[in-house]
Length: 281
Length: 314
Image (cartoon, rainbow over all chains, first blue to last red):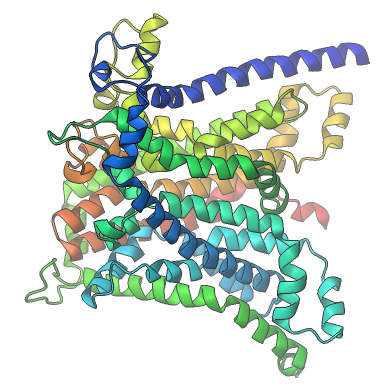
């Protein structure tokens, strides 16, 4: 009987494998379309009947995608803003998560509910009035604004860090406190290194969010300081205002690549971190 | 007197100081980047302010009343709501099925998990353009494949015929997030429970219904709430998947059709294109209130099916 059951289980595993493989294929169709289009000539795009593969690989599109919009400049802008937002966002969320997990005073529960409730505020409800006030006092087009946004932390990440810190036994800090270590010393030398996985997960999220954010840069920045997300959203077009899909797709590939690389480099720890620390509880 | 002693104990004081020291950055951001702008936005929404603030005066709730008489804006609320419900169901259902397929021993489990999560990593801006190209009637990849496989005779103009449907395809494509949450949820279910149920003769369906679903119901609930809140704020998708042709490099030149003119997109349009600041903010405030009330009601009354261990522990 055990044999039969194991056989049945193995059969079900292969069946599930097939279904998932099919799903992966379907999920990849749009990406294949993107890659193929990025290698086509412009006139090929509108040829009917449409063909899946390009007649010949037009690698030039990739060169054009870089030069046509001054890609390098926007890439640097995006990197600057991501760092300016990401580093303080991760640190401040880590701080807050630590506070909520370790120093529970009477009002901390209410404040934690407040953190979670900020998830419900539509971004535009705060960004639009903020933009109006800032433009009134002439404080737009300033990169430093991203730093302020970073400092205010990310509610979901605060929640995540709280979970991570809760898994660490308190005896670690207590012995350090006996030895007379201050609160920052305890945090940076003992606690912070222990939530490395949390820092990785948080950094990936912060990177992803600031890399894809569209509304804030489009409102606050002139073209000079604008980001890749804005450039890519506006698309590539020629003087006759025709949308150039082939070059556009090459640009999208460039734009997405940093995220993809970071994700695949860290995915094992990222997924494990998400599964282990954050989601239980 | 116990509370007083408790209050003034040096340990408690040290704790409280530490708490506020570590929470200070968030608190700063919360006050200056959320509370103040929201309050200011509310004040503006009670006036007749436009982009050119001349003769600004207090008009009370006039803007709010106007929102409820404006058929276009009401349509926006409605289509946003329809989108949100469909998106939530698609994301939760797809994510759950994917997690279920990947549960237990499976060859290539890590590979599938990574690959199916991957689309969620791609920024919306890029996803929008990839799908705009993918769904094109004559030259799009989807129609080419479907016609080649003889599923369709001629291509379907997806974006024109199904504007909402084409945006919902993104929810299906990016269900990886919900999949990860459910995988986390499934890993919390102790395997002994399955084993003993199997020995007692419970089939797969029964095990899912009576063991797995109750145990992961808090996660399903969490997914519903989060997905609802996020989808109500969808903004960029209707612009990039606009069925009207996009020309030049300003995607937002043409407003989307009314079937997909979501609240946030409408709010952006009213504020930036029509310059009606006060009216746009009133509209967004109503959205905020709606999300808040709906979530509270959902958490309060929608949670009756969520299984908790609290009673059992006692």
